[in-house]
Structures are given as structure tokens and as C-alpha cells.
Image (cartoon, rainbow, N blue to C red):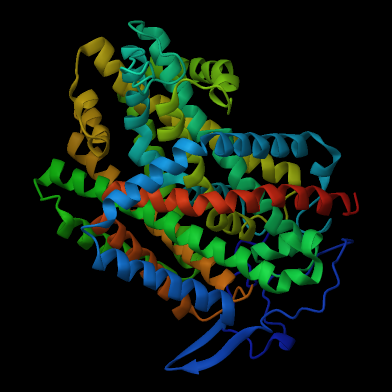
Length: 558
């Protein structure tokens, strides 16, 4: 088992595509190699223009110019774009919520089907391949890259929000339509039913569905790169559909969509993380929380991410991921031990049962009356996860070579979902208990970004745990930005995994600039609007990828 594979972090780019610029190792053992006339990097510009570059002429140029133009226009018209962003977000989630929900269900069913099918025995990288990372490092990178920053922001706020709206029950407007935000039919006045429904709705958003989205992208990339011998880009997964045309404009469009989705998905998370970090600093030290502080935080976080990028995959993101997972585990263990321990431990199983009980209703895409919950929560979440999927999926693929399809899907789908249930049960369940049992309503009344810190005030060592929470928010984003920049650069370099480091620094800086532009131009609505907008077209890409995965696996020797 190789803990430090040189294939993943080469020293310098090769001179030309014909000299083996692709750093991904060849399949080990008998696999169904796809013979193609395409040479990795053949459509690249490779040379020096002030700095050494190795970029895909079309994908890099269109993506970079498009994002720069968007950033400039948003900053230039920041006083006018907020209504536009809000309207765009509301229209997409309100009219296409059924499409997002239906697509999410398809992704889950495909992944579960592959786990139990004979196709699950196929090994990524060939039958003789061995894993590049041990289980601890592998799990840490999977979880930290996947949704660590989101768990910090929503770990208390979402269970509390769903509990409160469920307890409040259904309210109707003058036109007879529901105006409440309760999931399903709510549970008016029933504390225990509201708790179960609130936790089930939360787990629904952080369990099987988001991880299935990531797994589809990751499996498609890993299969067609490690087993079929194609470049590690999203277009490779569509070779069974487009054939050699995938190296032309059909593939260019897929990769450009992936770059846009990744940049805006990461910018959304950076903006949300900066808001929570600023709120925590104000809570602890009384620091201001205006736009200037948010901009400063984004700049600092981006600079830390750049340092991590320079240090490389194993010296940067892997170490930070393991440190962050250690801190997160300490915070989780602290809440379990000093909080309502027995309630948390029993609540874990109760919440899993509630999740299973309400899952069919929560995942139903048609005939829903809880329109605010579906469009404002679920549809936005699914679009957000999908906008993250190119980056998270490719990063998972990069670190998962040597695993069987079954082991891969169980790890990516089941294990993180269970960890999310435990996290939400411990933090969110503790906050709900404070309201129900102690009458402490500050956590219920606080803004979303402050609910975590208000919950921690009722536990010992508040200052220390709150500061750890801020550190976790910052470092979770650093690992996401680092690995996200690695992925964007791989796509924009035509599938090369060893392009010059300066290109990853460029993309990390872009993510920060887009986050600043969206915060100044549209605030949270702007962040959400762009995540949904880029997630929508990429949903179609993922649906097609499901077909390509099954077709590709069926051709593999078993």
C-alpha cells in the first residue's frame, strides 16, 4: 500500500503529450482499454508567457474569460444585481424542484444497485491494483473535501430550523397555499414528532442523496481513467456516448460546465464559511461583521489555501484534512460527553429510524404541498451538491485508485452518511434539547451563522470550543479550496495532473474573487443563485454519466 505515490504529485510537467505527460498510472492487470487517437495535452498551449503554462486552449480560455467577465459585471453593478440573483434562485428552485429531486433519487438507486450487483467486484485501476492511501487518510480526505464546511454551518441551524417549523405546523395564505416552511405536513404542537421529523429532514439533506451525487462523478472518472486508460477529465466518461467526438466541442462544453460549476460551488461555500467565521469572531471578541471583514477573511483563507497548494497534495491537503478531522472528532466527542450523552447515543438510532420512515415522502418529487421546504431547502441543496460534484468527484477519484467498486461506493456513500447522522444528532439534537428541556431559546432565535456558538454557550469551555469551531470552518474551506483548485486545473489543462503549480494558484485566487463579488453584489442570495444556476445543466451531465458508468463496467473483465 503506497502512502506517497509519485504519480499523484509529480515534480514538473513533461515537455509534450507524446512524452507521457499524463501522470495517472497504467491499469494493473487485465482491463478493457479504450483505444483512442487522442494524446493528452494535444490541444494545449504549453510554453512560457511571463510564467510557465500548460493549458487547454478552449476550456481554459472560455472558462477564465467567462468567470472574469461575470466577476467584473457583478462588482460593477453590485447595487442592481441582488434582485436579479434572488429572482433567478427562486425561479429555478420553485419551477424545477421536481427535476432536482427526481435526479437525486436516480443517483441513489444507481449507487445502491452497483453495491449489490456483481459489477461491484471490479477494481478501480485493474484487478492487480493496490490502494494509494490507507483507510484513515482516505476517509479523512473524503469527508473533509465533501461537506465539512457545510456541517459546521448547518450542524445546529438546520435541525433547529426544521424542528421549529414542524412544531409550528401548517399556515395558509389568502390564496389557500401554504406559507410555512415545515417539512411534509409538520407536527404542530407535538414535541417528539417535530424532533423526529426535523432530524429526518436534516439527515435527508446530508445522507445518501448528496453522497450519491459525488459517487456518480467519482466513479465515472475513476473507471474511465484508471481502467480504460483515458484522461482524468469529465469528458472521458462520455466516450461510450460520443466516441472520438468527445475530444471536440461536446467534450469542451462538458469540461467548461464542470469548471463553472466547481468555481461557483466553492465560492458559495467560501461565502457561507466566511459569514460564519465572522459571526464567531464577533461572538467571541466583539469584532465587526461588515463586508470589509468578510472580504478580509476570504483573502486570508485564500492565501492559506495557496500555501497548501504550494506544499502539494500530501504535504498540504492531506495533512490539513487529517488535522481538521482530528479537531472535528474532538469537538464531536466533547459535545457527546458533556452534553446529553445518553440522549445523543439513543438519538443516533432513533434518527436513523426516522430517516428511513420519512425517506419515501421526503424524496417524492411530485404532488408535494410543502413547497417552501422543497424549493427553499431540498432543491437548493441538490443543486449545491451537484455544483460541487465535479470537484469533489474528481478529488475522490484521485485518491481512490485500487478500491473495488463495492468498497468505493460503501465508503463514499454509507460511511460519510452515518458520520453526518452522528454529527447532526450530537450538535443539532443537543440544541433542540436545550430548547425543549431547559427553555433556552437563544439558539432558536439566533441567526443561522450564530446558532452553533449559541449552543456551545450552554456547555463548558465555551470560548475554547467556539474558537475551535472557527478554526474548523477556516481549515475545512482551505482543504476544499486546495483540492478544488487541483481539480479545476486538471480539467482546464486537458486532463494533465502535473500542470504548473501557478495554474492552481490562479484558480484558488479566482474562487476568492468570485466569492467576494457575489457577497458584495447579491449576498447570500447571490451565492445560492449561482450554485443553483451552475448545478442545473450539470444535472443533465450526471444523468448521462450514470448510463456511461453501467455500460463501462459491463465491459470490464470480472
